[in-house]
Image (cartoon, rainbow, N blue to C red; front, side, top):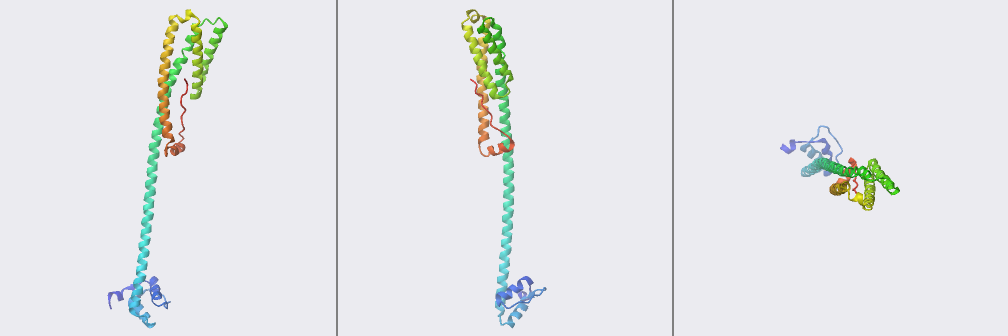
Amino acid sequence: MSHNQEQQIPDDIAEEVLNLASELYAQTDTQGYSLAELQEIGGKVEIPSEIISEALQKVRDKYQLQEIARQKKQQQLQTIKITALFIICLLSLLSVITYNSLSNKQQDITAKWAQVENQLARKANLIPTLISLTQAQTEQEKQLVSSLENAHNKYLEASNIDDKSTSTENIDQAIQAFNQYALNNQTLASSQAFINLQYEIAGTENRIATEKMRYNQSVQKYNQTLQSFPNSIIAKLTGFEEKSFFQSN
C-alpha cells in the first residue's frame, strides 16, 4: 500500500470528496478514511480510483485556498490595526506640538501686551501733572480738568483690550484739548514744566507705537497659526481662541 493510500482523510472532507466524485456518499465516520477505503467505497458504485484521488486533491486545494484567504484576511486586519495605531500616535504627536506652539505664542502675546500696558499706564500717569499745570479757575479750565480726570479714571477702570483701547483714545482727546488750551496761554506754553511734559508725552507715544506694533504682530502670528488646518480643530478641542488687535491711534 502506498503512502497516499495509508494517509488518513479527515472526516470533515471525506464526504465532500465522495460527493464531488459521485454525489452518492452519505455515510460519516469519526475516525476518517484512508484513500484506499474511499477508493473501495467508490468502487462499489463503479467510480474509478483515479476519480476519487482527483476529487480528494480538489477538496484539499479548496481548503488550502480557504486557509490562505483566512491568513490573508488576518494579515489585512493586522495591517489595519497597525496603520490605525500609527495614525493615532501621529495625531497625538501633532496635537502636542500644536498645543505647545499655540501656548508659546499665547504667552508671547501676554508678554507683549504687558509692555503695551506699561507704556499706556505711563501716559495715563501724566494726566495728574497736566492737571497741576492748570489754574482751574475759569469754566473752560474746570471743564478741561474734569475731562482729564474722567479720561484717567476710565483708563484705570478698563479691564480688557477693547476697554483699554477706548479709554486710551479718551486720554488722547483730553491731552489734545489740554494742548489747545496751552496754545492760548502763552505763560503756560512757554513754561519749562510744560515743555518738559511735551517731550515726555512725545517719547511715551513713540514707545506705545513700538510696543503696539510688536503686540499686533504677535497676535497676527498667533491667529494665523490658530486658523490653519488642522490647528483650528485642535485649538477648538483645547480651548484656544483668537486674540484681538490693539486698535488705538
